Image 1 (cartoon, helix red, strand yellow):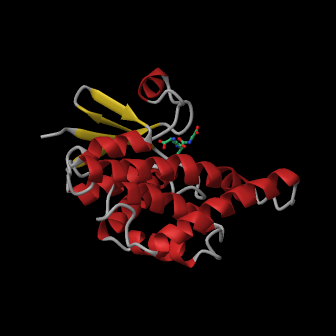
Image 2: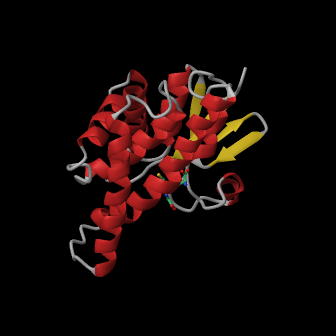
Length: 218
Ligand SMILES: N[C@@H](CCC(=O)N[C@@H](CS)C(=O)NCC(=O)O)C(=O)O
């Protein structure tokens, strides 16, 4: 039996709540039906212990006994090792999932993240750099639109690739980025309607709210 402990921040400000990447891990664990506990690391001034688990001082990380894994993509591959449903064993199915998992992180999230930072700052100046980023993301989304118009999930049955891609797309959608991409929107809606996502989302919100409460009482 694995001994899974997910670590996330003890608290974050309101804007990123519901989007902190421990959500991907919670979601995968819920889909896989695995038991796990959640621990916190300080949002401010994470010490040497934090950096020993996550060299960039970020979250999440997952431990299983003596194994410690950072990077949400790597963590989901690990969780997939306990669930053939989320990461098939046969090479064809397995690599169909793995290639789409990398595509979510390295082709789509890579294009959407810089623009999200702009949106979080409410900077609306149409600089050449911003226009370039916009066009770059739109090109990626246009290709995703074609892919998703023809299939329910990325690689046959729902998998860790869908957790990653849907999570990336819903952040783009938060700022209206999917307005012209109905198949992408429908896919994100389909994925986030799953009970495992709903539970993961509610648990993350409750986790940060509990720290608000503790701070208010202190
Ligand atoms: N590529 C990393 C990104 C992790 C990441 O960006 N984590 C955010 C929370 S969602 C964080 O820790 N931000 C604080 C920081 O970057 O210092 C992953 O997917 O795990």
